[in-house]
Length: 342
Image (cartoon, rainbow, N blue to C red; front, side, top):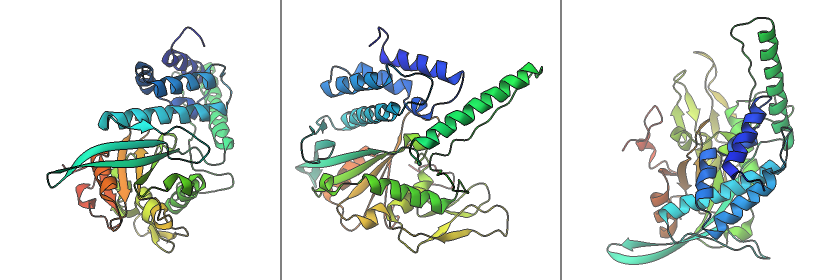
């Protein structure tokens, strides 16, 4: 470990990296949140998270380093723990053992028509990374290098203003042509989440799946938690990304943004069942969503209306910024611009 704190170390790494390329994993760990973690090291769990992150980043250079994925997982766990602690003082990490268990347990008090009641819910956290393993990260970094070379060449030729661009497509896979297809996005997210689900971590009826979408720059728009909405650019119908990831069914029609008036609006039918359709043992999903550049997550809960437990429902409404269900009971709260109506 160096004499600098972790936030300063990551700040220096970013500065050195951004002179040559762009590293999505490095940028996903927000400095402001790293500072929050370092300020909370009196908590043993947070102290361990900070130590673990240090271990993964201390020898990092400008080149791609797969250990940054592990560093981000530590960062995500620490941040979610602090978010839970802000609302539920008794929230705690469940120690790892031989058997698979959830990540966190949250005991909290509520009341039932004036009668005090003690609830307990369990949280399993999954942080989603880019599709295509490490290849997509490397492609972004290579494209960013090419962009920087282009800028330097323009300056070398006397340009007063130089431009360079590169694309970040977290869900893109090699050989997949259309990078923004709504159907593809929904099905890819379903597949990525399914790969990370272990039933043993959801044995209690009050189990909730947390999904961190920071790396994917998704989930920051409330309209994505509606079955369908009117997108603002062309005023065409569009399927809500994350509502369908959770509640979509095989055969459901998928609506995409039209290219121009008269162009087809239907993209096709889903070929997957959503997470809450396929897995009855998961009572609810809580999404930590981020728009591009956002430091603080937008927290949204989704649950099945017919079999949600009182404990899970109470937790979601206290913890989340917005909550919706499989019958879109709360869709009226989101206006056409994606703002929540208070």
